[in-house]
Image 1 (cartoon, helix red, strand yellow):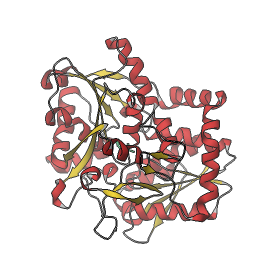
Image 2: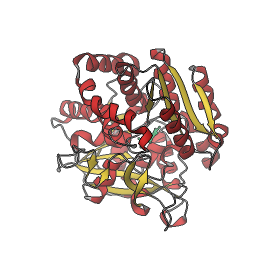
Image 3: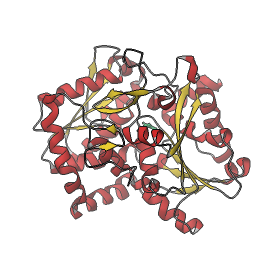
Image 4: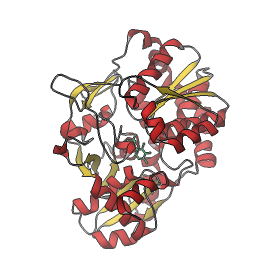
Length: 393
Ligand SMILES: *Cc1c(COP(=O)(O)O)cnc(C)c1O
């Protein structure tokens, strides 16, 4: 179990809970209860039935025949893009809202950058009839109008963060401030495998349904329950954590984590945390993050809003440091090309985040008989304008 979280909330030297003292009771309540609550039979039943009937799980494991012919290996796509709301994020928000209900909370808060996690949170709040406040940087509100409209339509209140760079990190600060002021009735739904312990482990467990299904589906299709390689893109690391989870201790399975190189690792416009990051503390955990010599967090850049994050979840920092996973970074241009190629080879338009993972067959050779599963984290509808601008469609 050396790649899973330990008793103290660490993955190797990464993780932990580095939080202001005033937040301690909230996080402690979660830490004391998350494993007990999520292992109750009634919790599992409700989680599984919502994943099935509301989200649309299991998602297919699709053998991509034309992609496989082009790149000379057996490529399977795990179709998280077919989930309700168009990506994997809803697996986590369903799990967390069921947990919040059992903790007696009536109010949900969340932070969002591009708005995808805000929409997934607003969706489950509508489903459960819970009050929902989403903090979002003022700049992001202006850039992401369709997602702001979705959240409002779903009944959420979108509160602008007006301090600092007016983006994700400022929205996160506002959400934490809100939580400190409302410790009893409010649960904070974090959107990726980041944050203070137990969040990374909790989010990873909810997302681990992805690799659980891959095991069963590969058994049916190939007569074996593990691929040779599992590939996923990494922003904060939740879809990757879910896709890797059941393969972590099987060292026969090569893990490939794909980061956003932006305009190039050396360009100063990138989000390639493992290549550029150093140890530091962000959003309540010790991990790798991009920072200046004197420890100021560097503004990340990627063409995909979901990978535009200066850190990486502590599990992934450990997978990198222990060399359990291969880390590869993909530029904007290569990701966009891979997105267009998947559309034309397989009739699937992927999210630009996912397109980074789809660039791997072009970047890295595989043997003809090898089975490679790529986690298709989301659909590209939200990215159509970026595709249009990039390719002059
Ligand atoms: C949010 C998002 C990501 C990045 O988040 P992770 O927590 O790293 O998974 C990747 N793909 C899609 C489609 C997303 O919406």
